[in-house]
Image 1 (cartoon, helix red, strand yellow):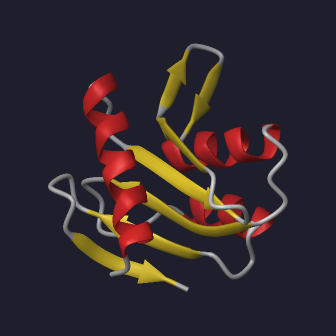
Image 2: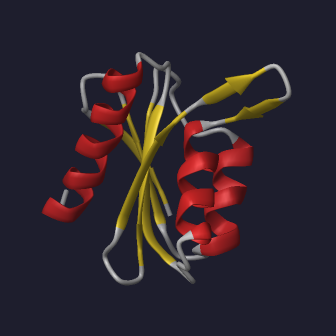
Length: 108
């Protein structure tokens, strides 16, 4: 794994730990800027961590994603998460990591 991919996994783990959330995520845009997020669970709004990270990138003017990472207890990313990443970054690698930061899989 390259250092930039390791960085977004670390950012996702940090966001998850800081918020005490079940999932954390981070994305890197075409300019190398990173955005990290956790799951949002409000009575009227439910978004996965990766959906929030993608939305943050879009709202900051990103036009493409280089990579995305999600730290989760699940074995792989949800289909809706993959779709959100692909909407902005068709070629972005999606790194799925365990809560301890170990890489489980990479979706290309």
